[in-house]
Image 1 (spheres, rainbow, N blue to C red):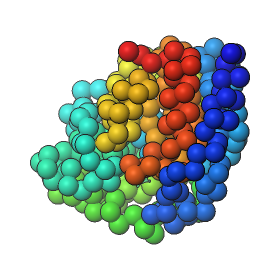
Image 2: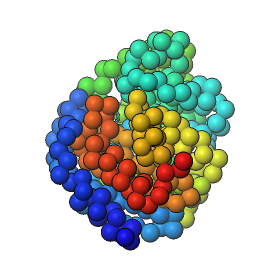
Image 3: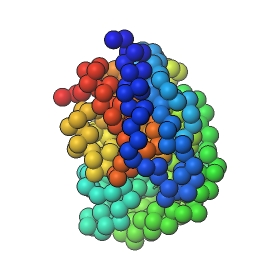
Length: 304
Ligand code: DON
């Protein structure tokens, strides 16, 4: 089958899967239609193959962590980010407080909330507005278009993100936060509230697959070394406590987000962007995982 047909087949195959639930701990996310389902595959040659709701906008949420990590490595170097944040899986939920406590105040890895807040705080900027501008501009360059903030989701998360604020204060108490705790959480909340669609995710992932060159705009967004660093962390930590199972079944570095997005990257080849808001217990899209598994097998993308 041609790639177009395979993407379409993956969509047909899993469009009826109705297990999993839409996230509601951020109240605005609960408005998502559980039946939305979009798939986009973008190659390093810029080729695009899509099915379903690939143009519906949703907030990027935790998928932003991968790209902010790349920006931080590019800005201050891999060693410093490694030393300050860490790269080991916690084996615990993405918003775990106990993981920080069990590890002497280490944020553990940049893909959980603690590590992502610490990573955002590491960006070398002079104030919160500049930090936000660097994040928004950087993620927009990965996507190849200017990304906008979803104000409603940002407001909703800001009103309810007590746990993230507690995590940031805890990191601060251990001397592990390079910026003001409230400021770091606010920029982190904004980065999670950037609106993307499945196509944007695929272009962002294809940029990591392509040694940092955006295959649509041709811009070198980050270095090839930074892509390698980012993809290795996605392989071990991208799907939280399910990362081992994901790598075992699908064999690709990937990142999920609680609004239902997944980006899965095939180095040197391209990336899949998937969107479906029904989540499993770890916060990963059910249909998105199945569609990525199908495409990884059908296209022979598994790295191992
Ligand atoms: O900080 C949070 O809880 C959200 N802004 C992001 C969490 C998330 O996407 C977890 N992913 N599955």
